Image 1 (cartoon, rainbow, N blue to C red):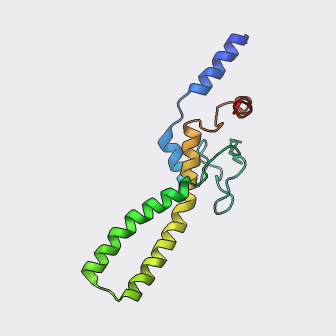
Image 2: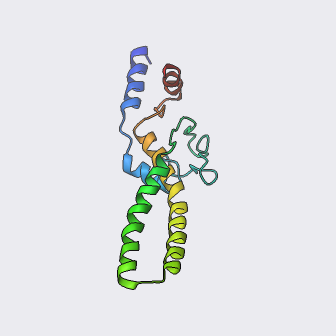
Image 3: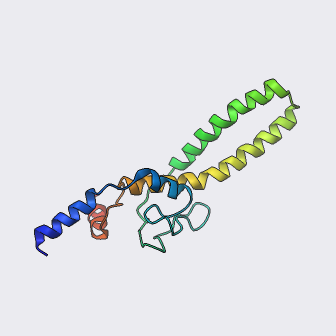
Length: 146
């Protein structure tokens, strides 16, 4: 293989389309966005260093506060109209309503947060953000130039 052929293959690998929605669905399920088999998270919110099945490296992911913001956005948009509906239609006692909505909000937040983190890491993988390139050698080159 000549140098230009190797460069061409690397460029093709770097620009090859990664399916975004399947990757996000896999990440939402807590699975590797590349193969869908390995675990993405090894505890509640800790991202694995790499996939145990395909070897995809996740150490350069940068989910940061994004999953928390999305969780607040989704939970708020679901619970606020539901609270208004329950208050207007059912008129429960204030303590009962506060108790149920506090528990519901906490549970929904706890369920959504790791799933949204997985989806965000998967989106970064699919869009080749933060060093998620096709070739590990390219990952180190990208990280060294940042």
